[in-house]
Amino acid sequence: MHIFWTIYLGILGTVAIAFLLKGLRTPSLIVDFIISVITWIGLFGFVTNTAIFTPLIWKFVFVGGLLWDVLFSYIGKHDDGEAAMEDISGRAKSILIGVTLLITLGPLYYGLYQYAF
Image: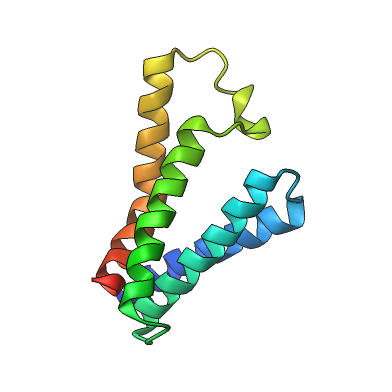
């Protein structure tokens, strides 16, 4: 099981670096990148069983990061995906965003929850 967590950690780190290299064009993308790095550090602590900061800090990171990711995904304007999802109805679009969030970020927030609580 540990190898799967390590692979997931590596995938998230690679995606973060790719976004950094692509360029952070708006303030919301900069905030998203910063929050992603902070949550990645928490997941790193969970996967490596290393105490980084205190559990109280990770509780705030867990709640704040989860709220940010949900709000940013549903409300934020994204240049990359808007054209691709233009033809999808509102309800189907919301379901697609929710399923994508659950699959891609579900393990991250599960690990952060385990680390914080």
